Every structure is written in C-alpha cells, then in structure tokens.
Image (cartoon, rainbow, N blue to C red):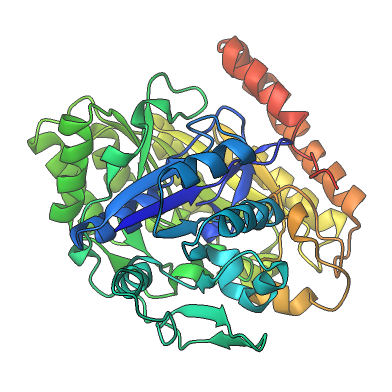
Amino acid sequence: MQVVLVNPPSPPEFRVSRGLMGGFGMAVHPELLYPPIELAHVASVLEAQGHEVRLVDADAEQLDLAGTRDEILKCGPALVCLDSSSTSLDRDLALAREVREQSSAPVAILGSQVTYTPGEIFEANAVDLVVRGEPEYTLRDVAQRVASGQPLEGIEGTSWMGPDGEVVHEPDRGKIDSLDDLPLPSRHLLRNERYRFPGIPGAVTTLKSSRGCPFDCSFCGYTLAQGLRFRFRSPEHVLTELEDLYFNHGLRHVVFRDPIFTTRKDRVRAICEGILERGMTELIWQCETAIKTLDRPLLEVMGAAGCKHISLGVESGDPGIQKEHCGNKLNDLSAAREVFKACRDNGIESRAFCMIGFPEETPAMADKTIALVDELDPDQVQFCAVTAYPGTPLYKQVKGEGEIDYANMTGFQPLECGAAMGPDEIQAKIRQGYRRFYTRPKRLMREVLQPTRLASRVARYFTLFRRRAV
C-alpha cells in the first residue's frame, strides 16, 4: 500500500522545526534545516510491514502549500499522515483539508500539539484521525487496517470523529519499551544532502538515541511527549545507525536529538569508544544535555570521539525558579563552572539554554539569569521566552488567566497571561541578555574572528520576535 508521510512547509514568516520542543516545534534560524527524523522512524516501521512509503519534506524540497498538496496527490496515496507544530497548526490543517477534499485516502495528523488538543483538531474538519503519542506502532496499526479495508475504530493512541460529530478518544498507547526493536530510520527517503546547521559546512543529520527525561521541568515538551522514564537504545544499536549514515550515506555531521544525552555515562562512553573503534574518525557531532550529568573525564572521552558542541540547560539563575520549574538541574554552581571550562579545554563549544518569563519571575530574577550566563561564559547563549505548551504543568498553571494563541508558540513569543512581567518587558529582558552577552569585550573579540557567524547572529537577533501573520 502507498503511504505518504508529510512534513508540511513552514509559514512564510519563519522556518519551523517540528521535532524540537518535544514535538511541539519551534521557530529556528533560517539556515537550520533538520531532517524530519520522526517521520523517517515511522517510515521504517511501515516499510518493514511491506508498505511503499513516500516522505514529502516540503522545506527540503522547497515546496509551498499548493506544491506540497500536488506532490502528495501525485503519489496516489492510500493513507496520508502529516506532522504538525503548535505555531504552524492552522497551516498544517489547511494542507490536510485540501488533501482530504481531493483524495479518498484517510488523512491523519501527528505531533505533540495535536496529542494534547485532539478534540480541537476536528473542529477544522481537516483530518480523519489524530495519532497521539509515539507514532510508530500506532501508524503501523492504522496502515494495516487501511490495507485490509477495515474500519479505523479501536486503535490505541488515536482519536476520531464519529458520524454524529462526537470525538472518540481511544485508550492511550503505552510508550515503546525496547527502542532497539525499532528498525533504523529510512534515510533513503530523505534528501540528506539538503539538511544543514548554521556555521557547519556540508550536510547535517540527526539521530535519536534515547527517549524520556528524568527531570520534571514544568515547561518541558520532551518530558510530556516522551515521559519521565529514561528509555535508551543500546550502544550497539546506536553505532549501527552511525555506521549506516557514515558509510552508506556519506554523512559526517550528526546532531543527537536526545533530551538528556548523557543520562547514562557508561552508555555514552561505549558509544564514543565505538565511534573510534569502527573507524568513524571524521564524524563530528553535538548533543543536548544537563550540566549535572557531565564531568571532565566524560567530556574528555566525548571530545576525543568527535563531539564539538554541547547545548546545556541553564534555564534560570534564580534558585526559586530553578527548584519550582527547572527540575533543580543547576544546584551546584561550582560544578557548572567546571563543566563549561572542561568543554572549552576539550575543544567542545558550549551553548547555554536560558528562559525568561516564568509566571512569578520579576525583572530582578531575570537579571540573575543574565548575570549567571556572564559568569559561566559559554561560547553561545540562547534566550527563549517561557512557553506554556498544552498538557505541561505550566500550561495548567496559567490556563484560564488569558488567551493562549498557538500561532505565537514560536519559542520566542512571551506568555500573554499569568506572568509577573508583561510581554514587552519579557522581550526587553531577552534583548538585554543577548546584548550584554555578545558585547562584552572578551566575547566581542571571539566573534570578530568569525565575521560570517557574527553576521548570521546579528541577522537572527533582528528576526527573533517575528509573529505569524493573521
């Protein structure tokens, strides 16, 4: 059976990377284009069942909404499934509606936003099915039903609307226990040469070696989508995928998309040793993780195995906010300073992820975050506006205190409800944080040595707060 998986086009105002923020998506640097690796994982499961799969990645194939629709219909699909994000949801549904109107194939949609607002999705009359939670095995079951001509009712992890207009939510599907049972993602369906990361020459790909995060942060889409239990692929399974992308696809730059890559230090060591033992000496990679899961010996091993960049969750410099919202991940500042220094000593560039605009956060609290970043002295910093994604504890805290517009969930638009600081004040603090960090004399000297990257950062700064057109 022909199945078409779709990563819809970004809105015209900014690029959206739908896999970020735990599948809620985020507006990103225009030079960043990640592969839709979640859809590639789904495709591999469907192909293992004997289905023919076409993966349409609109941004990589430079397709607008009309072009994406035509490409889908040209395939003559028996089943269509689209990915989604919070900020692009209206456009994602508009594409789904057009496909549904012009094709007899059932149209499904997946993603964290639709998982936690499934009832709302059917108001647009755009889809037949919402796929909630981890999609691999749910879409496998959906495809089996379609192929055999059976109705779609009763499939775990789905929501659908009956003829009487009532939305039926089937029971949740449990998280996948053994990630090693999943086949490698179907990279042969992707335009691998087109994916890129700012400042990195050549093609870039992503790899998910684990799911789940043990830190229960109030705002986190990853914890919500993947759970608190850390589920990981074995080093052998990860190395097999690295060999596939390295030797079969000729890829040399990898971004690990795990929420906390170094949760298990022994596993990371085994992966690093395997990279060197298997001759992948040109591999350059980066990851995201928590400061408290790192130490100098591990960073030495990672640096020797090709790690060149680590993004670290700093979030807030205020102890109260750290404890209330951030999983208390930054409770030892001396250890944090050592981690950032050890990164630099081992040739690993560091980035501090910071957030401003928590409900109780005052300007003085935000100033603590800005000052802490100065003290830790990472190579890069990213200040995001606190965002209340549906289903998170933060969303439940602020819901009802004002209107929440999904289109503004870009990662940089401040909360417009339930915050001690107003949206303009939050944006001003974010701008202040960037200016203070990048205009320090020692920081400015480093930036001047890389004028192309500096120009890119300046351009990004002036586009951070773009809003979706109404």
